[in-house]
Structures are given as C-alpha cells and as structure tokens.
Figure 1 (cartoon, helix red, strand yellow):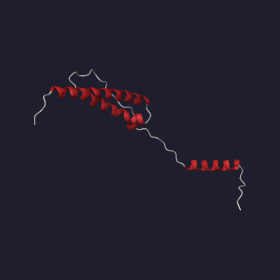
Figure 2: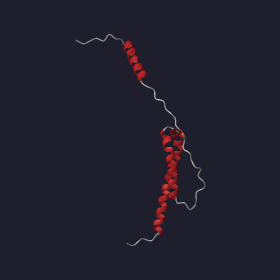
Figure 3: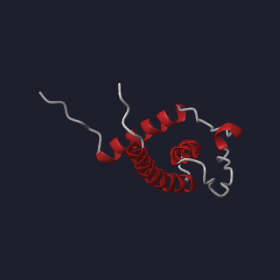
Figure 4: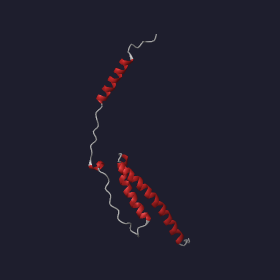
Amino acid sequence: MASTNTETPVNQSANLSAQILAQAASITPVVAVSTSQNASLPQYSVPGPQVQGASKYAQLLALIEELGKDVRPTYTGNRNCAERLKRGIAHARVLVRECLLEVEKNARQQPPQQS
C-alpha cells in the first residue's frame, strides 16, 4: 500500500525554507581581510624612450616582467589590469615576431660554421 503524503505544497515549501534557513544559520561568514600584499595594485616604472642599443629580446624580457605584475589583479577581477594585460600581450606578440626576424637576419649575416 502506498503511503499518502498529507503535506500540501505550501507546507512542503515552508519546511524546505525552514531547512535552508537552518543550514544558512549554521554557516560561519568568511570575512576577507585586505592586506597590503593582495590589495595593492602593481606599481609600474614609467618606461622611458627605448634604448637604441637594446635588442628586441631585452625589450621582450622587460615587457614580460611587467606583464607578470598584472596577472594576479586580473584574476581578482581588476578590469584596468586586465586591459593592460591584453595590450601587453599584443605588444609581446609583436616583439616576438621582431625577435624572430632579428634572429633570422643575424643567421643570414654570419657565415656558416665548419665543424
């Protein structure tokens, strides 16, 4: 014989709401503490004019170092850092292409080495 449920949908909803409220009351709130380590935005050095003697590779390394400062704030939702990271990645792609061209140019200029 099947058991009949005497609770109406309204009573079921009220019981479910009471259970959810009881569970929510037992949860301890987590308070985010802001420290200077994770709350500060990255500090940037203002890039001066590019040194003509610096290779594209050196420029790329400096750019990658600066990009690293934007990664964590981007994960925490900082839109300014995310946009700066996007621009930096685009610039890094250009520099990588220029580095490859520089390497190919240098390889063509050097005579082949004999072993």
